Image (cartoon, rainbow, N blue to C red; front, top):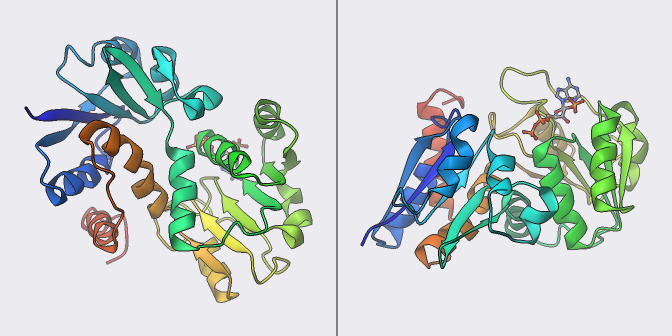
Amino acid sequence: MTVRVCITGSPVSYSRSPLLHGYWLKAYGIDGDYGREEVPPAQAADFYRSLAARGYAGCNVTAPNKEIAFSVLDEADESAAALGSANTLWLEDGRLCGASTDGYGFIANLDATVPGWDGARKLALVLGAGGASRAIVHAMVERGFERIVLANRTLERAEAIAVAFGKTVVPLAFDKAGEVMADADILVNCTSLGMKGAAALTVDLSRLRPEAVVSDIVYVPLLTPLLTEAAARGLRTVDGLGMLLHQGVPGFERWFGVRPEVTPELRELLIADLRAKGQLAA
Ligand code: ATR
């Protein structure tokens, strides 16, 4: 019987998840279907509680429903429990289970593209304190970083994340980020700056050590002004598309029983789609 899964959220039309999971379903010859369901927040709790009745084996959850999805789980894995949000749901003996795989996706992408990136595990500088930042900071705490400096325009949001994850996480005002640049093993942009249509992120990279890695979660454009400058300085860079690809791996394995591979061909497929939709330059 065809195993049915979908991406849910509102708006859901922009999601690349059907393309991603559709590629893997075909590549592995699995009898599965990955669709799209527009689920406004007001209907979200009912929708997730009735997943099985709707014929779904599970689903992904995107904005703005990740916290609502978490609130109706029977069982949350460690990542979802730590973040109070879930992006991957599945059923186990009729129980609704959930995980948050964004942090995993971020780390797995770095492991795959810049092996050894976390050799020192001393200091990470993270810019931005929204939902993506929270997931990434949590994953870096788990990975064993000694200190994660979290710089945000609204200091209270950085402080709230620090309270949640303990004293490894040090909140900082956004305009003070330059002060810790010289000690950072990795710089991660989790703000929306640099995204197509938004202002560029302007931070002074001159003090970063040559071994430092610069990573951006923005993937439209793929080469943000931040990454362009970092590459020009000879630093190792990681764009945001890989995180999107890797965050899908744990869900696919849960639903369809195969741990899928993130391949260059898959990455090219997503890039071609972004280009076709006019989001990336041809
Ligand atoms: P998400 O949940 O998708 O990660 P978000 O909650 O919208 O995104 O967070 C966006 C991040 O970009 C926030 O850290 C935001 O800073 P504030 O918390 O102060 O709003 C940051 N951001 C957006 N525009 C910014 C700007 N012009 N300068 C500095 N930071 C900015």
